[in-house]
Length: 386
Image (cartoon, rainbow, N blue to C red; front, side, top):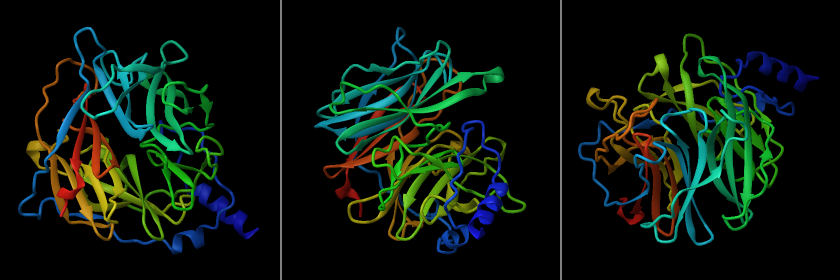
């Protein structure tokens, strides 16, 4: 009875799901008081402005997709993985702009990083007028799994009938039929697998988890309280990182509440989450990505420069490292070149859009969109990091 009352209270505290995620299945087998007491409360910080000289990394660049007048001109939501001896990338492709009818999921691969195959359509909407958005790709038990969301378009461009799907492949060429994961969400990144084996993902502030080894079944919604009194923000596109005894997610704020800082939430096991807290980590209004280096340090890739000259432009692209996973006090410039947009389209902006990273064979790979129309991948040797 005690556990049941705690769950009822937690559900009452949860805010309604945002427009990106509608059908939440709350977990009912948790003890919030035990989970939350053990979560660390340290605030994330960075030193982008206090570091006197930021070194520039030596970086290689390859272009995966460059639009021509005859091509579709919107390219975004990229992800990359190493699988079966190849680098494989996926991304969204639209005719002109973001979230317009017919948006699809594309795939391209490379054996040498420099040369990429012609982009091919991996999935198209099943209903005319719908939109597809890729949610990342993951190698799970020797299978390549691709996550993507399909939705319709309602009045005032609202997203309706949102469903998350997955397809998998043993070779990256032949794919399974779509698997309906039973949740309504746009994943911020591919699911994160904790050291326990549990998968968790965010769809903005809505969290989901599963203990199913496939990563494509058994997904459940979680418990998360509202903001602390006097605080509010529109939080989107979280990046998850696991610490020794807690799991953290860093979100960017957007819209009218954009404040130039990341916000954090924390959990013991990805089931019950704390209220959002504003951090001291600067952010220039783009999705960022967190991970761990082979030497055990934590890293962040994003655009932390909030000065007026760069505000909202999502530049430069920065790597920041941390020994303790909270204080990111060593910064490196990955790229700061300028890409000029070639074709107009809705919501097309940002020099370095939605970076996503992997580490393979002593290198970090960063895939991203440029002004949401050209897709690039960057590579640099980790030996450059102090």
